[in-house]
Length: 374
Image 1: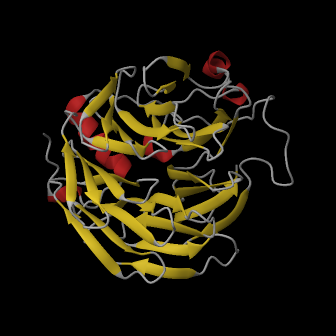
Image 2: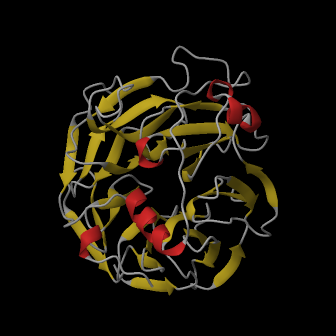
């Protein structure tokens, strides 16, 4: 298994994946696309058209790598390479902080709320998963056992367990009541980049740099199924709210939607108006590496973060109808590092980073979180 060592501590999750990929798979990037356009089949515009920025949170001092909305929609937790997780009010323009958690000794890579909204679990480059009070930032537990960066954490819908995935290639399940490790799943041969629970809390799906998605039984830690539809690093995975389908995003430039039991593929998303985009960026978008995938809470739409040719320098949020692959919208051509749907599915929280080195940027420099219309 690859060991990244201490020098990787200050890197973002995307940089970690790029580093791991450089040791596993060839990677190529092309010149940056200059513009994006909206599909003519996009949903009817509201008072805030899709992509409209509603507000901005700017209190982190380094890149924001992860965002998560509280179950009641009131707060957002954002984790950063500044080693903090900050909890702040999402429903006002002031976005005042309610707590800052400073328990990690390296960059925070992932955060997850407990179903009751009282606790937060955070995974870090310091190789630990930590649990703490969402509003007071009082430390509750530290889960140690991973031998490399913790890239992803997810809280079981029933609130009883936490799953974590690491660059050490393992998925680990932790009992919230006792703080004890329940199972270690060793089915992957490379970094575990993303995990998601089934809605009934019985299974966990994990996406890996070994190009596969695996499903484990959360009740006993056994292997259930392996999905081999991708041809490159699988960066993200999301279970549908009804529990029947899984969406997985990959560096093979696709999002694939497939049956969680049989692996039968419903469709492969390769972008809107792909052929037109090859000749004119104004008439479509040809996605590059898929970096994140998120199923809306009502199950109707899927959103993804993808690069647009130029690596860490720019990206786009793409959304479409989860079952018909129609009604596309795409927007945001600044670096996007994380995405989360609001519980009512009307807004996105995205983490961004802007630099004056990109002359077409009008936003203020820095690392921050935006709330935008979904």
